[in-house]
Image (cartoon, rainbow, N blue to C red; front, side, top):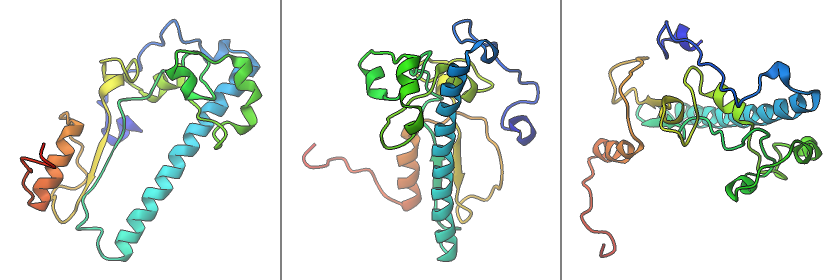
Length: 192
């Protein structure tokens, strides 16, 4: 779909799987169950986000304010591989340098993705999520740094449905909003 929509070049090819990332067919049934649940939870999170953005857009449309509302949607530095080769039911463990075992994750399979977990998926999903680029968040490579930026503002942008290839940076967002609103930067805030 990315090729069909022109998001990536038509001659793009998938990156080779890193040797450290096991092939799906090599996994045990328990590994497949846990790793599938990890992606199901992530997909559920994205579906929820999509629904909530849709509610906001529908409300702006119903109020007649959609065309003159600047909407920007982006994401954080590529898909994240910190889950390692098992993922984790608790990202705080990862932050503290601890890797979760398959057995620990299996014990929490029924609550994975609920408020009882702070889960993170297997690094293999991060590789898949950054398709067609290699590597993941925290690595200075396209899979770690290239993200979409969707901008919608019919009253202020003449072009429609274009895909642009230039890079942006998150520090460009606030100056853009200030320019749109006709605001000047404050030289001093609270004496600083």
